[in-house]
Amino acid sequence: MGQILASESSQISLTYDYIKILMKYEFNVFVENFVAENFFPDKLLWSKIVKQTLDIYEENKWKHSVEQRPELKRYYKIHTCLTEHRLLRLAVTYPSLNTKFMTLVKLGAIAIKTGKCSLCNMYNTDILMHYILCCTSILQIRTEMFYKIVDILDVEDSVRFFNQDDDEIVESLLGSMNHTMQTPNADVWSLLMCHIADYMFKLYQVFKCDLYSHIFDLN
Image (cartoon, rainbow, N blue to C red; front, side, top):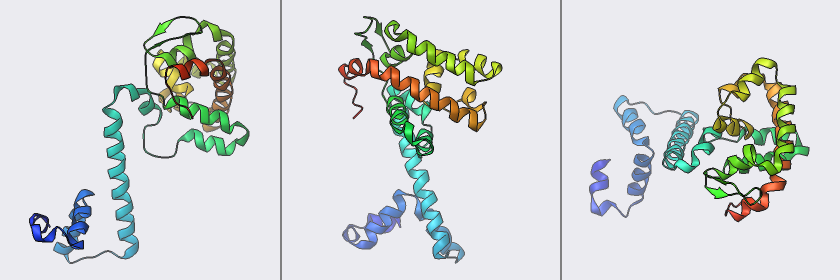
């Protein structure tokens, strides 16, 4: 295959384009093995090989892209693989909360940025974290949300939740399945995220104009 790619006369042929695609996604390894072993898979098996190989390629490409951008650290911890967001599945299960879950997904995708909060005039190196955990102008809604979390989780899980550092708490509130959020069973987690989505949407309604002023695009 390498010889064909090196030949200038072959570079305008369909074979050349086909081999380039094979090598880009490393399908050439499979083809060369099939030829060497005189074995060619049926259509169904080859389709599975192609799908799995493409999935791995796109996943690695996406991970590499995200890992090169420190400002997307939180996004990567919340959405750890290239697949449908788990909160979108909850949005299907609870359609009345669709807008609120979509807001959580969008907030979780926002890059970490510095900024000054016009609600309380405090400067922070992570303005979104400031809105969610620190801004005194929305203390009441935040407090109600935290009390609701305590009501839903058992004592041990509640202590574990609030013993997280600030980054981990924000990640948990935005849908991360970190170690702490994997402890409650699926039903408790779903109930918890429904209430978190409700309270986080209330918080968002207060800080969204200030958020727009920091050039975040949630549209």
